Image 1: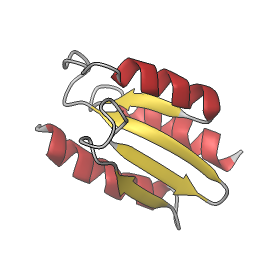
Image 2 (image 1 turned 60 degrees about the vertical axis):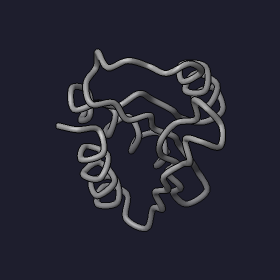
Image 3 (image 1 turned 120 degrees about the vertical axis):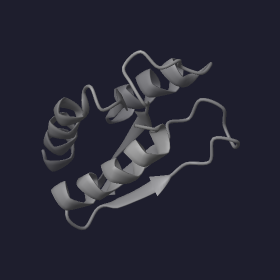
Length: 96
């Protein structure tokens, strides 16, 4: 599955799992390495960096921003390989 197809499906799944959430695609050209998606849910937020597979190449700074944002709130690399686990963690983080 291509990354953009995975990302579109993931956005739909997040909106179903977290009704009322806002899922925004971030501009990769604005800050290199910023995660692909920002999820807003009530008074909480998270970011997700989408990959077509667990072994897909990571761009410079992606690891830095995912780790930094995870310290602030919640952030993960997500692929079809770990999607269910990440969605479960996301729901727990944003609903607690």
